Amino acid sequence: MRGPKIQHLVTPLGLQRCCHLHSLKRRPIEHQKEQKAEFVVLLSKRVTEKKANVAAIKAAHKTAT
Image (cartoon, rainbow, N blue to C red):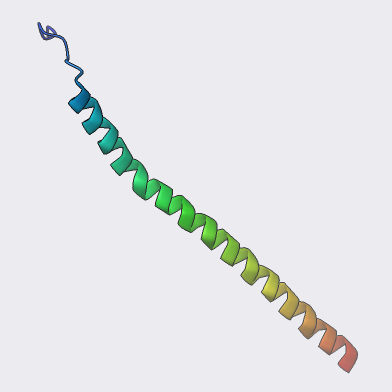
């Protein structure tokens, strides 16, 4: 197949549309990254709380016997 006889025109409007479409694609990805970071913080907090609980229970059992 042959290519087109005219070259692809790059106009300011075309560039603006392209930039806007790229930003629309990036938006949900950035939002997902933010939520993932928040979740990691929450998860680490829960893990440390659970470890503290388990340690407290073990200490209570140890002193009871």
